[in-house]
Length: 307
Image (cartoon, one colour):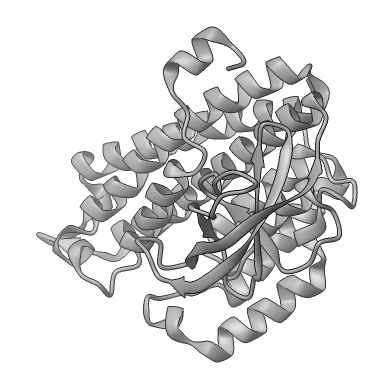
């Protein structure tokens, strides 16, 4: 495995970072800015990144874009549509369901996420691809991504081979891991910037070892997460399905735990202001906690390989 990014991959990462920095919410107040969200939606739609997988992008390239969007708290759909595109290429206005939407003949009982502007939600049940309609949008713990209940009777719209199903599940875990790493990076940057300017007892708080050590530990967790994520993202396309899925499960467990620690540390570094609504640190934490709950992994799944 060559961990170095190609020139094209670096350009893709930089383009995603620039878009996130330019149009992502720079404050909690900006989350309600309809004009900014409209411009962001138009920009993301213009990139074609929601169809990355069907356009031939590798797992590494999908992870690079998702990570930057997580870092910038981009609040229009990307991850859900990217995964839906992996299930049914060319199906527009579709996202992914968090839970299984019942049986083919029963009522849809799952919940879709990343649903702003979406009309359908897809789920992979075994090797069957099911589609269900999306109900009214709702705001959950994650302030950057809308969710919605499913309703109606789910429809089977296709099937995947066993290998393709395993690789899609690996990609889903890798993509949510990338979002976790991005949220952690954004929270850590926010904490470092605050530690550089906040003064206490005549010195910036970042100059005190107690704070510096917290930030150093957070950086170490992020670097570890990047390493395990890059391997899992590479494995999606390069390793046998069983090994790719195992690598993705390990990445999800590691990145979820690391991201929660980093985001909670960011709140702590901000002190009292970190517990206020206006501080952006809690938005990173909310996103990380939500992504940690998507496609959950249990330790026993890793121990026994494919379930």
